Length: 306
Image 1 (tube, rainbow, N blue to C red):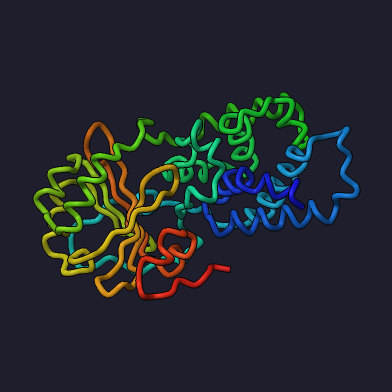
Image 2: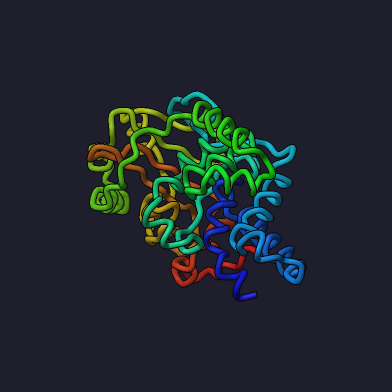
């Protein structure tokens, strides 16, 4: 089983890009490893490497899971920008959302060279593609498999793979400039956040910055709209404690109430020296157990997710 297990992190990254959920990715990888273990005796090393064989199983598991599934998205993909006000609508189920994944579940070597390919905006863009095109694009562009290797894995011709890749590239929504997250800027933003210094927070935002709060489709665009909400929110931002972690190749923060109860996961995006967007994932009870960093952060025990 060790020979199979050492591929877990790389398979998790692949399944996460395919499915848009860390929970579904872990389920898919577990199913892949169980199937492989059951059929290990029949595995023929002269026909394919263990890695290729595992990716073939994982691809079929993901394609099965995606059959008939609703496309996962971000709030900015689902509704027009809202205006500041008390009405944020009804929450949507977890299956509606592209969710963050802790860096600890991913392959460190892959993150080092391809961090861009796991950021939330890119994973959300992938969800627009039909599942087989999605698999082709990830295998060819992210994991750098050859057309021949990808064709063998999918049981398709090289011509069909090349055609699917062209269609996928054409259909993939633009995700904005790919620059690394400005971690010093994020640190300044977090400091202002914890002080509830609205003027300083707003000064760090792009003019067209966005903010969103899954599981609600409500989101805002623009510094002034965000300022209006920050000024009138009585909410959990005051006296919040932020505990740093990493997800999707970037810094994220577990937001805890003053009494230690988990509240939300905060993700901050940056562009050209300013904060371009924040996403506050409110389902902390579900998401926090994925992160080892949060287990000892408060008096409240975080239970495992499986």
